[in-house]
Image (cartoon, rainbow, N blue to C red; front, side):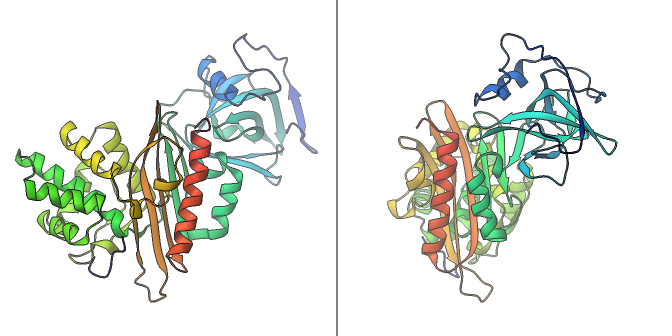
Length: 376
């Protein structure tokens, strides 16, 4: 619903050293062709000192420290293969190289959508298992999708959290966009949270407002609930209580022009999915509303998720306030099929009409679903 104003091993000239492979029987073979091999080795290999040595370990597990670019050769002026983020698991091969006094390692990596072997500086690697979840740029999941997003530029932000494997893929993740009707999700979560603090349940009328706000994307229902929670003050208090930033709420009558990043929406949906916000009864109510969205509000995730998946979602679209007459379109939700779950948020602006925005969010939703649930 529209929210109106009221609402490779080659090293070039470098020198390299090769250790004799000494893989355990459970490790991946040296051709590294298995899609799941890199993570399998990373999870089963012994942990060693985090300090790089003069010779790369022999088929040892490693993780990215903060972020790393993997190149096709041991040089930062060579072709880029992939961009990996903090805590991403890799497998160091027996190959290492010294380039201009800097030690480089060759490493294998894999995701449900891609796998490969490339070179990165040893300083980007830790050999001590980290405690946090992994991240990567969207090109680690799908190279063509990354190129598609790059062509759009800053007018799109994407965060895809693979809950099953604990990896988040991002593009323009912290850029903020007008939220339009997707603002109804934080309104609902804030409302339920306030009820729980008061120790009461929603009245029949309040349940009707919640249902019509989410399922039918009714703007009048959203306005009533927004005012009831204290508008900006209520939203800000709730967001602070759950430790999530990146949402700037609008004034009453203009809540649809609040701004939020896809990282923020995914963080909220993650808490809803794993039960760390709301009690179980209210959580089930919220997910129930989001699973029964009207057909005209099921664009993007709603009509381009893997077949047979359960999708708890909320879309939004509106006209931007910057005088350009362009459109804002977004889709966000939780997708579950069997034991697999991922959470996706796609925000766009600057679209020349709603149809252009819908085309984009549908394409991103489809590709992410194909990569994260390839057997669906």
